[in-house]
Image (cartoon, rainbow, N blue to C red):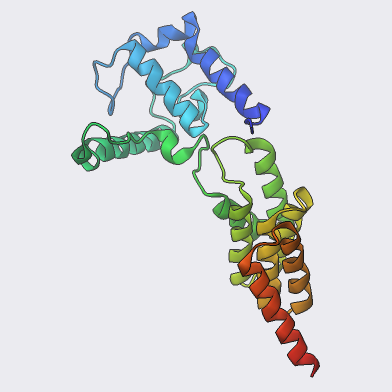
Length: 252
């Protein structure tokens, strides 16, 4: 069983302590400048809403509201609209309300309710792992991609924020190769196989990538490694047979 990294647990604990203490609870008693939430929202509902937003997006109170991290929440100016992220949050809340109250309402009481966490998964910018790695590669090349992958896995592995399954990561590598980014695909697959040399997805996709690039010997080696792990695989056996025929044809 996988558990979230200690960072995630610490973050969630700090959020709960911040908004649940008796002193902090006072900030929800007489809210002002409510523009999306009903103006008669009671303190308990407001507290739970803010807690849900923070945990869903990975943001802190100081991200949207005027105040400094570590400052007593009673000293924050929650009514202020000075921060751009607060205005963006209102747009997001309106969107969520529209989805739930209009688009999903037709599906009855058993429908799934959309929340911040549905898309954000505990991170402020809800990119998928492939998007994060592509962005890192565009800024820092193959090494930047590897560094970002390691950082994300260290911080979020075991949580729902990013999908680190072998199949997902190997498919990201395949997409980088198809985009002509062979060095990025290679560094990602190498990193993945360093972590788990017995990864069938890693060896299989590596074989596909090497075959498509014309390196048949390297492709054959990876497919044979995959076959050692899963000898009953029809698709792996077929690829090995095809490559061996290609190599035999080249030697004639």
